[in-house]
Image 1 (tube, rainbow, N blue to C red):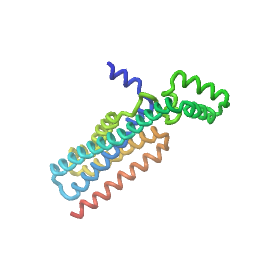
Image 2: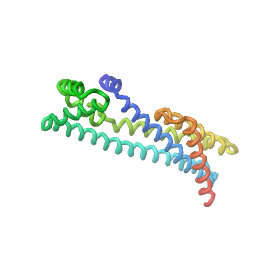
Image 3: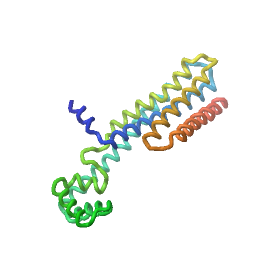
Image 4: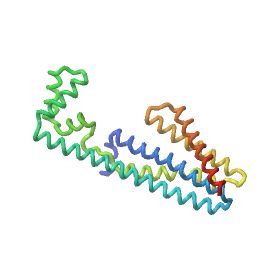
Length: 229
């Protein structure tokens, strides 16, 4: 129950960070797995060999993405905690400096200096540390980015992204396996591009086309590599 309550109180930044990790993981899973599948399939027709190669790469990619996200977000979390500790110390040793920083924040927002000072004094009287870290670092006190959320999001999305081309190559009839893989890459690449562009308020059409082209280029390059051997 406590964990559920904590999830409900997540900030938008925390939720977006988890989604970001998922989108990146999915895209990486698609491209790395299809790259290995196409290279091996171009070199051999043994489906078991192709499947084992694809599965091995899927697992390696998923755990690599997860560990990378964990390390990256852990560093960011440590930086945020260090900033909070620093501001907590400054509130005790340089209160006037902190007051001036909060006042400047509101002056920059267009509030008059007198009103800004009144707001700053009131906020630092009620919630000093919370106010300072929000104003100076845009950190919500107590809401640090969770490395485990990012890691698991990246792990499962990378596995899911790589699973699509792997299943297409494994179960499609021999005559249709290349078409199935290409369609799987197009559909999954388009989906991840759509989600990422929506999250970043980007241009959906351009993002989708770009991702599909990258996926097709990946297939072409790795097919050529496989044919060399």
